[in-house]
Amino acid sequence: MKPVIGVTPDFNAGDRKEWGGKEPTYFLRARYVRAIEELGGVPVILPLVADRSARRRLLTSIDGLLLTGSGPDLDPTLYGESQRYRFPLVAERRSSFELDLVRLAIRNQIPTLAICGGMQTMNVACGGTLYQDLPAQVNDVLEHRQQTPAVQLSHSITITPGSLLDRIVKRTRMKVNSSHHQSVKTVGRTLLASAAAPDGIVEAIEHPRLPFFLGLQWHPEFLFERHLLHRRLFQTFLRAASRRLSHQPSPARRGTGS
Picture (cartoon, rainbow, N blue to C red):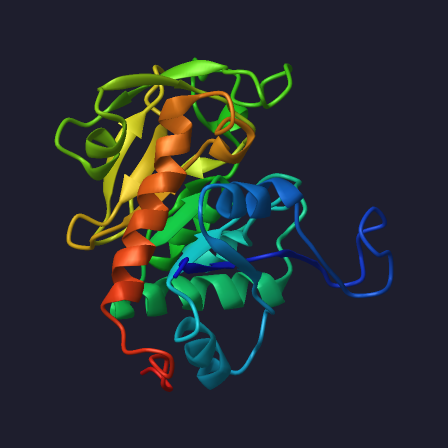
């Protein structure tokens, strides 16, 4: 059986002209779904349910969790700061859902891959903080919003030896794309930084006591078709989800969770 991967969508609460206008709308870039499907998983787009028991129930129906990126940014009040710069905010319905799912995924040891804004959500859910605007807050910072298409590589990262990321790509340096103006400032409790850009900006975080719990600041879904190292990220994630699937009772394995 192929593992079922829950994929979080973006959400327009009715204030974004480009996605549904005044009509509340779910939307998701197809590249996330394609990466999961083409590499051996069954992607399921998750509804952003508000009831916590419904959220727990959703988690019992999946074998892995993929937190996707987002155009808007998390409300800084979620990590104890006031908003210092102008940027659109992630809809509260999405941020509440994803922050809660991260904590539930940790509790239930569900393999989790978080990409770009998803990594930032992962960090905040674990008590970490963010740079609200890299160019304004960090001296001599690289250009982390590349001007070239996202299918092209932008800058290198250095990977922590012995980390999960190191074990996946089997090297301590690799090149990534880059499309963000915020990033991890203080790494969340229980998490470790496992990669950094040349300017010191955190590019990956992970939970050292879980089989697969990894956040990436770049977008491997743009790169997996042409670059083996980025494909390995999804393949290893899906293998972790498959192992979870193989250890669950079937077909009524899901139950109600906790």
